[in-house]
Length: 176
Image (tube, rainbow, N blue to C red; front, side, top):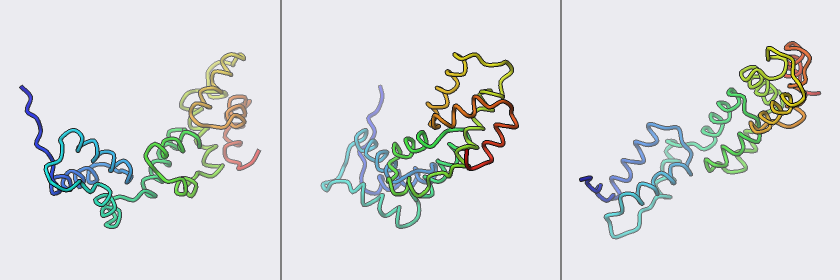
C-alpha cells in the first residue's frame, strides 16, 4: 500500500524550491509551475494560501534564478544542436520567457546559418549526403529543416548547395 505524502507547509515548500533551483537551470515560470504541481500533488497544511509567486520573486531577487541567463543558455544550446529561430522562440515561450527577453537574445543571421549548417552536417542533408538528391528527397530535407525552425530560403539554399565548401561559405557570410 502506497503512503500518501505529507502536505506541504511554507518551510517545506521553500526547501523543495531551493532543491529544484540547485539541481536545474530554470526560469521563473518553470519554477512556479513546478511548485504548483507539487502543491496539487501533496496539498497544503497551513491556514493561509501558499505564496508561490512571492517565493519565486524572492529567488529572482537573490539571483537563484535569472530568466535572461536561462534564455541565453537554452538558445545557445538549441543553436548548437542545429535548431532555427522559430524553434528556439517556441522553446523559450514554453519555458515562460517574456517576449522582450526573447527578442533581446534573438540569434543573429550568421549564428542561424551556422545552426542550419550544423543540422545539415549532422543529418547529412544536401551536399553532406553520400548520394545525389532527387526532387522528393530534397523536399523532405527542406521540410525537416523547416520543422527545426529554419526559414524556407535558408533551408532551400543549403539543401541545394553544390558542394560542402559552398554551403560553408554561405553559412560564414551574413548575407545572400
